[in-house]
Image (cartoon, rainbow, N blue to C red; front, side, top):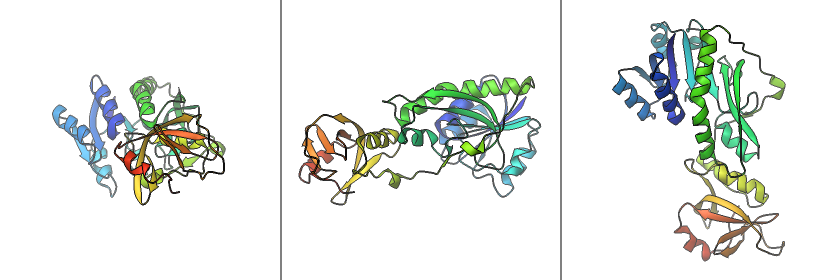
Length: 288
């Protein structure tokens, strides 16, 4: 089959490398920030469309290629209807959740924040909606208590190529059986920005713990503010340190290890920049 690939970022590069080994890749589409993908295409002599495919530029590029299948993996742009119908067989996308739950951006981060015990990857047909197309196949992936956004990406990287190949086999053998999503169970979460990482120390220790681990590096990180200074927190863990409950939430209870009061307990925290510890010792309380 003649395959077109729309990919961005690390998961996109991983999928590209895997498929290039033995599939008939006709072209790649990516964004300008995915320099490793661009360089890989240049090295392998793959035709590569870089940038936003809107305003007919993407349609003209894809239309001349006469592909059978169009695959989207972590692609940074909205795929419009003028591209969806160009492949002779199917256009499908891989999404990092068990649809119809967690439609939208960075779903694995939101799943950790919300304390989910399980997430997964969904292969679905692309339609005019946002992650609303018919489901082809799903893989369930557990979220362990110690998982972070980064470790979930690693789990995804072990499964993305396998799922893409499984769908391609079904398309090639004409055994694909897409099933409509149950929209009554659908949830949507929007794009996160670095400013969304602000911790509210009035939250429970469990929510703050999930908040921190979900946004750990390579993401921008959860943070707090101390006298106008942004303090990014790398990780946290529960503490059995005693305290009076009338103490204000966000109070620094200990400097070795750094321990902060929440509404229902204490958290030990590790800072992204250890030098911030000296600053914190003189202030003793975080702002919300």
